[in-house]
Amino acid sequence: MHLGTTLTQFIMEEQRRVPGATGEFSALINDIATACKMISNGVNHGGLLGVLGAAGATNVQGEEQKKMDVISNEIFLKRNEWAGHLAAMASEEMDEVYQIPAGNPRGKYLLLFDPLDGSSNIDVNVSVGSIFSILRCPGESKTEGPTPVRAFLQPGTQQVCAGYALYGPSTMLMLTTGQGVNGFTLDPNVGEFVLTHERMTIPADTNEFAINMSNYRFWETPVRRYVDECIQGKQGPRGRDFNMRWVASMVAEVHRILTRGGVFMYPMDEKLRDKGGKLRLMYEANPMSFIVEQAGGAATTGRGRILDLQPAGIHQRVPVVLGSRNEVERITGYHLETQAAA
Image 1: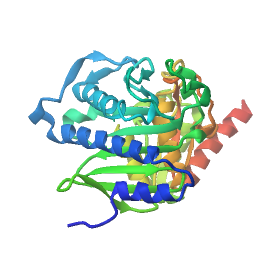
Image 2: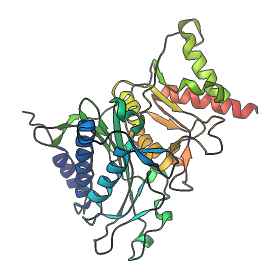
Image 3: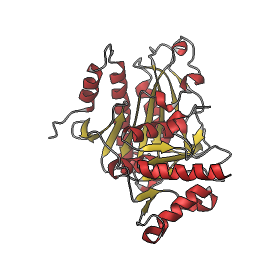
């Protein structure tokens, strides 16, 4: 039996270090963890519960929803709407801000989430996950009326907490509150997340990169240059061999990078230019960038730090390059060189 530190104990101990802490944040994290446990149960049972396959609808992004997308979104909403910790929520799967139902108490935090990242993989039993981000609700928005969209439009540097749950061979919850990154593994025998990965760090150098090579013909010159150099290996300008990875699940990609290093890219390309990029700033890029930076890595759009971006909308998309610091800086440098020469 594992007698390590549980998530609840860890959060409570962190809370004691904050003068005047009320316990509201700790309770919110526990509610999020409960939602992740419930989603993990659905993912793990898959076809036994009849939750695989398409839901027969599309989300606000115009993407086909899987049944577990819909179920996971509902779990996040219902687990977090009643306790009084939140002023409002926003989901990648929903067009509008989700207001706390009338009659329920409201709190001082905002929750943004991607309820089931990588859900296109769920039918083939590949790891998927949930991503979340917590912000403080601006004072003027803590009224009895609906919380406006503008309350959510804060740069990633303002995040109070970010994390993700990975539903793989084991279920893990990775968390940062701006004091490093810690990982918790779900012990299914007792239903608790237990601290198993303390102070995770991303190596500054790596021999692995992850990108969707099928988009090569649409990439900008700096990205082609970087990938070409990696592919040339020892015979090329980098003088060493690289391995390429691609899971098509951002949670799985980032988790691998947190564990052993690497760089993940979903860069701008000609197909995406009108949309601004592929990944969502508020639900994917910001929380993952916060986690990666807290583990010693870097995260940029290719041209600038993601966490410094001022959001223009809750469903805004951006290019993403994140992971081992030296590789991210090299890719960013290639972009800036090309930009300066233009």
